[in-house]
Length: 157
Image (cartoon, rainbow, N blue to C red; front, top):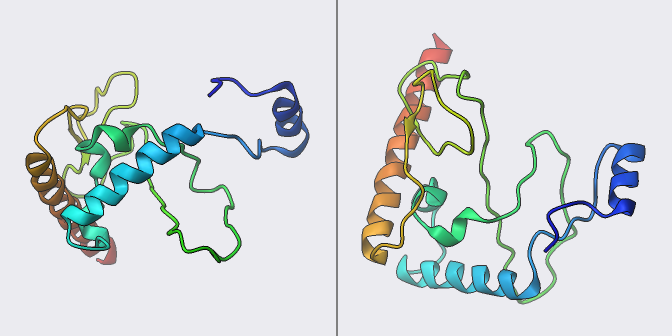
């Protein structure tokens, strides 16, 4: 896939403030990620609960290369009328100076240097045993949830 917008996409962005559609994955890449996602679902014994797959980008190499957009971008799609499931994947980006009220949630440094220490920096995922990666994902998902809940408690005070 190209790493730059086409001239038409660039013009659309300048005119409308967004570039759409932007193909993020080739058909082969999409099939590979879908297969990896299906295999993870089998290992989890069915459709995973949100807590089971939170922070998955910290532990699975294949989950690290998906397309992203800012949370403020309006997005949606028509109902899924096919027999194929629709897969969504969310990563939230923050700058290192934006810190939580409580705790140090795990994060992966996308670029640059973290001089603030507000996050517990994780290493990029390595090719490891799937059982090890699955357990690490479950542990970090629980730690993430604990930090989120603690921050909500502090915000309510």
